Length: 414
Ligand code: NIG
Ligand code: FE
Image (cartoon, rainbow, N blue to C red; front, side):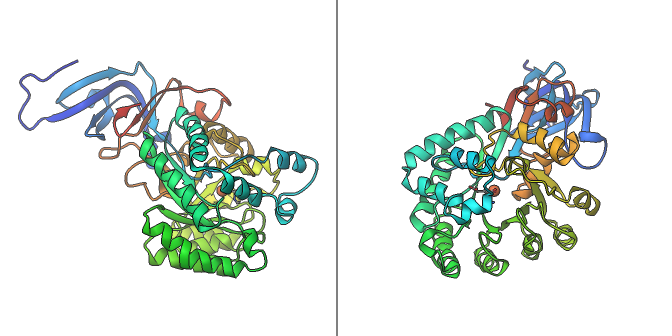
């Protein structure tokens, strides 16, 4: 409906007004889910221009008004930890694990991450692009408007650049936001089998600078584990990243307590991810540093892990908790953030509200994007998911359904 007649000169100009909505703003203060019932939300220049109870709507010039007929608006979802670009798959290894082989045993025998590295090195950029687009489409179809993608299956300069260039092409061509993370220190490549320090030298002296100079990464990640890299080695990578102004994040304490959380905190990392084996000191350090804990229930499930991340203590200390798919062919063949939310309730006993905060507000913080997105408030990007649901707890309840009705990215309906 067009209403542009005789408005006062200082009145607001809105491109779109969504009415008859229930809104879960996911702001931390106030009611559960930051709920506003019978709400309206106005968009102008891709941002939220006004949000509140319909009864309090101010006068405005409105180009278009749409009734949502009681549907719910939440912040568009954010998958803050994926390894979406990879060649091949590891279904055979999955079957080996079902028969009793452990993830570490397979990795030490040259399988695991290295088998995906071989397949990824062998794949063309075109193939990787096409396969990743299909996976990205699954995430987008269930309401993700921001997806982080890590490299880490190249492990030499050319192959890491190939992966990150695929990510850049996805970022250019996709209608959602892609964030790129350089994960050169993901595993020790075969060429450096007995010389992991030598590989870290290469990461710091050649790979990271080349990635940074080409503008191919928004952040730098590493894998801190006995089958990967030590805290000392990762500290070198993080120092190199920070000297170039790149924020860091860490795969920490997934299979053992290797001091990963404390290391992440020491470098004021955006996030420390996995955390199954993190203990007290690490949690305190995360809390003090304001580092987000990213929990990955898909990997916990797939690895048949029994050691739960320290949820209670993270909560007690006020560490923000995000959840993510960790989509990768080895430990988390999961391409659904909605399923991940459900897994986080059943495996980790997160509440449905914590799950939604984990894929909106806290996921935004894990990417350093919380100024801009992850909650709904005036001035934030209008990245909105509209759902055909009667309450947002439904989003962590069903497995395999898709109640997404519309996705707005930067104010534009997709
Ligand atoms: O997040 N932990 C290390 N990296 C991945 C697994 C990668 C793989 O097994 O291919 C993860 O679980
Ligand atoms: Fe991961």
